Structures are given as C-alpha cells and as structure tokens.
Image (cartoon, rainbow, N blue to C red; front, side):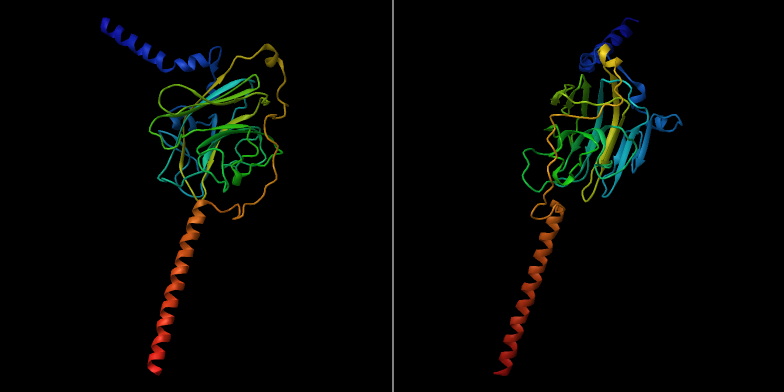
Length: 327
C-alpha cells in the first residue's frame, strides 16, 4: 500500500509539472469539450452528433487527422459545428507538418475563426474574402521578390469580407503581425496557442519539446464577434506536405461582466493595426513562376541549347565533308 501511494504521488507531481504552463495561462478558465478534439478520433467522427465535420481530402487515422497527404493538388478541412458563444478564448493545437521534400515543400495550413464554416476555396483550402480571423501557418514562400522574413512563417489576418488574400505575395499586404517559426519536420511535438482576450490577440508556440510557450506576436485592438466557428484547412499545389492535426484544446477565458453582457454577434471583424491592402503588381517573371517552374524552365533551356549545339556540330561536319568530296 505504501509503495502504491509513493507511485501515485510521483504521477501527480509529474502531471503537475507537465501541465504547469496550461494551469498558469488558464487560471479562471475551463476547457470547452464541444470545441476540443482528442483521440480516439474514430469515436468522435462515427457518431451522428459529432461536433466536428470533415471536408475535401481529409482523412482520419488512430493517430492524427490529416488535412492533406504529401501529394499534389489536395485540399481538406476540419470544422467545428458549434458556434463560439463566449467572447474570450484560448486554443491549443498539437499539429505536425512533414513530408519527403527536403528543399521544396508546401504550402502550410490555417487555423480559422470565421463566420462561414465548411467551405472550400483558394486560401489554403478555404474561401477568399472571408469574415473573421485566420492564423496562417505558411511553410513556403510564393513571393518572387525579397522577403524580410524566412519561412515557415506564422501570421494573422483579420477580414470583414473586403480583403483579398494575395497568395502570390504570401498575404504580406494584409497580415497584422507574424513571426518566423521553424515548425516543419521536427521530431519534437509542435504546438501553437492562440489567445483572444479583451480584444488582444496573442499567438505563442512550443516547438522545441520544452513544454514552454514562446510568444510569437501579440497585437491589440482586434475586434471579433461571437458565434463564429473554429476550423482548420490545408491545400497543396505543385508542392506538397502532410498537414496533421493531433489534438485541439479550447478554453473559455474569464471575461469582464461588461463583455459578457454585450451582444457581440454583430461586431464587424476589424484590426486597425493591419496595413491597407495594396494593389497587386505582377513580378517581372509573372506571379505564377514558382521555384519549381523556374527549375524546369532552366532544364528545358539547357536541353534546347544542347540540341542546337549538337545540330550545329553535325551541320558543320556535313558541310566540310561535302567540300572534301567536291575538291
């Protein structure tokens, strides 16, 4: 009996140490089961009353929910079916982005809080001109010109339906903030935390296996309504990757009495710190020239040059041979 008590004590201490950061970050809060996702996934999706809905090429195994596999031209989504009725919340997402590509891979995935769920489109598998918040986990630089940051890159975009996400520019002109984060292909667990409280949006990561959150960015005056939906989406094009969601833990945070009493349904999504959208201007090589297309173009030009060179060589030799015969 004594040994069992000692073992139980060690287990309790271990769990407390393991989740200490969550307890500190979420004091006065509690997890919302309807907006969370854990193993076993088959039990979650096999019931008619499931809180989660799959679209596109998403598949479910006993270890992960895969938004896209490491194949070209795939798109998938994972959407919660219950609107968020509380004004302040925090979401922890355990994810994994990986694949066979060493230099060329893409494109990443997005964590959504939007008005219209379960739609598909060109923005990482979801519709453009959306209403709400996008946390973009971008792994590939589509921008042909110079960037002031490396990829992978985490950024946020708030949209009231009027903004276009410029995929060729990686949304540079419409994001409100971001940070570099080498989350792809890591052996350790990779997690991201999104906290929205008192109109402040904070994004943090834990990608080094140290169970410590590292702030990515924090920005104020972000206005989001209630009764929007959480979701995830990803898409691949010429480049591909596995985009896996492993678990989702969503917490309702403590709100002031005034915020709880407000009718926040009709708030227009807004982030004053966002740059105004700039006109799109094509690059000299065209916005569709990805690194992969440029590589194949170079190979094609080399083949053409070799063919021309070989043809010229045989032509000159043939002329010399004919002259020799004539004389």
